[in-house]
Image (tube, rainbow, N blue to C red; front, side, top):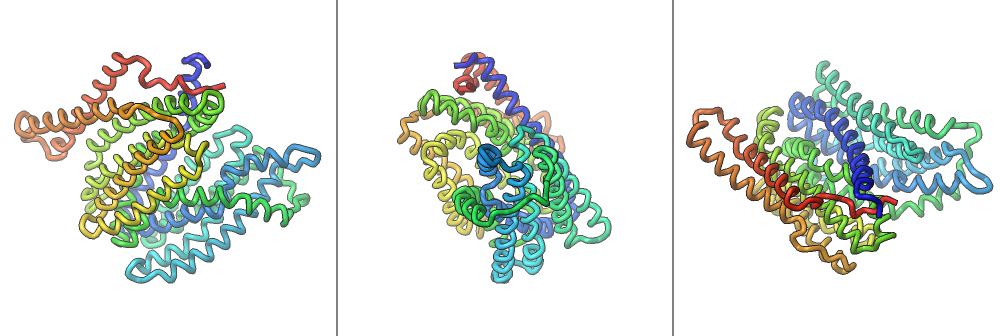
Length: 500
């Protein structure tokens, strides 16, 4: 095994790089979120959110899994007796994605036009027709930027997705609102931002992989058809993952209307920091999990993923407490109607915490039993499809968030059950200390809040009084976690992962 410090340094660098990328993206998108939700209003923002969510669902299907599968394609065809220029392979991939995207766009636009009026407003129907074809530009960005990673250069994707796309979107949407385009400004902004992303991604791929040599590029239809058939399973897997991540938004929009979908869309954006904690670890833990499994076996890998669960959960629970403190005030920034979503926001971030932390072990299932990993997404979709229509008539967007929280808990239990079948038997309470610390912190924070409300701070503004309990809870939580680390050194260490 490598020295503990070596594992720690490699994982820290990988997590830090990904986290920096996510911070850039979130900062860029925060300004657009404020402009879209505050200036355009909940209904228009809801229409935009629903339309872009359909584009984001179509993109994984139309890309045919090429965001991941272009790497073995490049490895195969740039080697051997008759190697091809890397950019010609990228052009082949873009051609496949363009054909799939065009066909899917036509089908989706036609399908959305036939949705019943009780489910879809005229504004949303128009937005679907206008925005769905932009999947062609989004796919171009996905495939071309993925190709740049083949050269081990991450900066192009960070710049494209973190700077070019969101800042162009924000600038165009703000300018459109200024000129009175209150109904179509966000849709126009998405098109122009997608075009800017596509152009930047093609330039980036050319810069990394060499010139296009267009006069010498000859697509091979039969070979491309064989490639497309081989890519179908990866495309289907990506589709299920994308649907599981967005089905709650679709159901809220179709069942409750444009304005509730706008509020729900804002809540989904505010939960992004909790979501990105897990994503920051994924980039480095995914290859390390595969390497640890191949060298040390499933049991050791289970112990490593259990440690990763503790680390991710510890960070996420701190963010949940911070969100509880600031969420009410954040929602009020967007105007009237958003603050009512505070309880739904808390349920949403708790669901994301469970999915993020306890989903780390799912990487073992992906490598050993990929069909079981897909079942997790299918079950999430089924629970949402049953629970949201049942709960939203009475509880609104809170009902949708609670349904997704129930789905997250059930998915975590199923992952544990299936891992036991592979011989990975982790202690039932291996992540119990962060959960207990958060529970104790919440109780003490609530007590401190009651004392403040009835005592020294009883004349303070209501906003301050609301923030006191979660802020006290956060302080207590940090203290308890610090004590835990001193009592059990290495309990949050990731040294069990194999790095070479």
